[in-house]
Length: 195
Image (cartoon, rainbow, N blue to C red; front, side):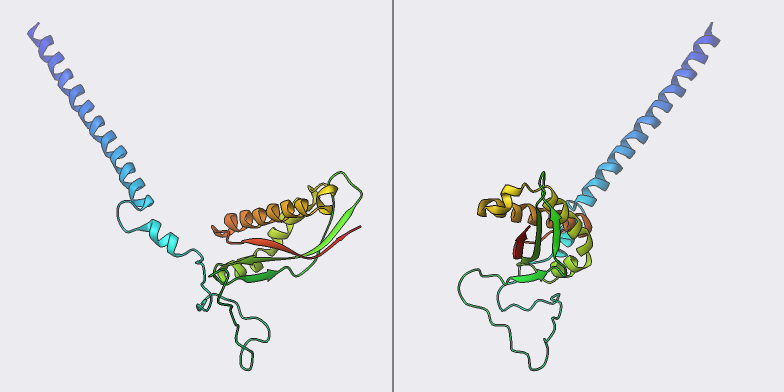
């Protein structure tokens, strides 16, 4: 009988050690995951969140140099300098004009709309670069918006205002998905024809 008690005691010690090892291993995994989460969020370690924020397009004040601004035709020697007014918005506004017109049918209607668009940003030139880079994806999103617009909306100013807001949101959604940042402040109709 004493042999059986000795065997049971050895088995209990073995199970106790195995349990301690498993608990220690679980604590190590959970603790390591927690530390990794804190490091990735930037709360611990080298400010990852701050470096991501620093890499996003910044608001550009009037008269401030924009290192990302793409050069436009005619810019260079002999071109007149850009002059900013002293009043109004303290930030510079830059515009992007889509290369082609948009033509689409309207929702539940035989009417067609043809328009040319531009949009604005007060952020640095990266937004304009991204607009050009992703123009195809943006055009597709804007054509979907037009096709989902009721005919009554294109005849009224409030309806056109809603359309501008929907288009601005669609552009920012595409840019956010592609580049991680939107930055477009508004959409403007250059031409607007309803047939």
